[in-house]
Length: 206
Image (cartoon, rainbow, N blue to C red; front, side):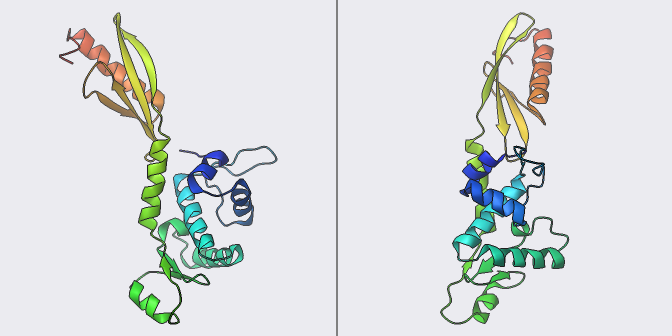
């Protein structure tokens, strides 16, 4: 699922200016489609959105954009297998430095100067919060379909988190079919409806 800049702003709490600046300076670039000139559209993945939320949390915690860029450069060199380091590594910060939690959080906290404010970036909570926001945007649509002179109402719902569509028939309880695209989900439920109508089943029997 690709997200444009308008969606990114709504889902991350960043400003348009921040999204543009972080893309051009390499804090978080769109992984699906980069801008190819004035007026072109950047497209971000769900993983990109997670990184942007983590970056915003770091910025809100006092980390400057310059420090973030330096930290990201180091992370990319030392963790090349992590394509989205901000979304894959657990981090803590004291407002001046960024630390990777790879063993024991208490040891890291103890190693800092006494009295320093330390907060952990709860990656799991960030991801779940973002999924919740995405599900709010999953607005169902209705399609009227006709199968062998019988009319049905199919409700199509996008799952923006797992990137698929669900098709349900209003007249038939527990009719649930999925597809990678809206059309595929619709084709799957139509195929099932056609088969059942051919068998002469009533709506209640379906």
